[in-house]
Length: 145
Image (cartoon, rainbow, N blue to C red; front, side):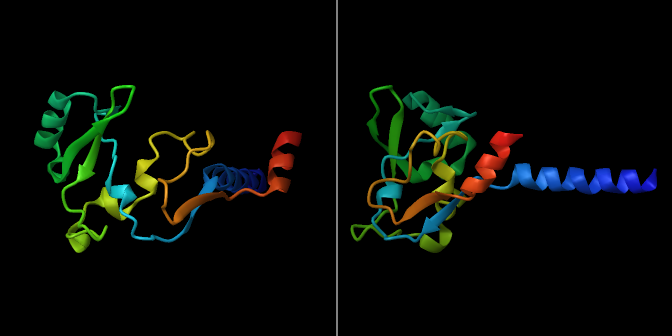
């Protein structure tokens, strides 16, 4: 009985570890192209910002929003922003004091879990990319079950 519980515990932990393992990992390094600081989509309450009113509310709720200005708009109506602190040399003028959104690029720009699976990658010119963290044998093993 105790052995069964111990076995169940370890099997459960192994399953959790296997399921929670990242399917994709970030590779590469920054090329200082500045593209990650341009054409940024911002979220407010889990929704992409589509109006100037939403952006104004966002600036009141989150001081980081004040670092951005509206740059453009997508055909779907989503506002695009650029950072006020991007220098002419494509380097951040506040590098050591940049927000978490910037520290964690490109991971922050993935709006939903299926982003990479739909073939979307980092912005053009970026030195970062994503690669699969699951081997082909693991995919076949999963399909057999």
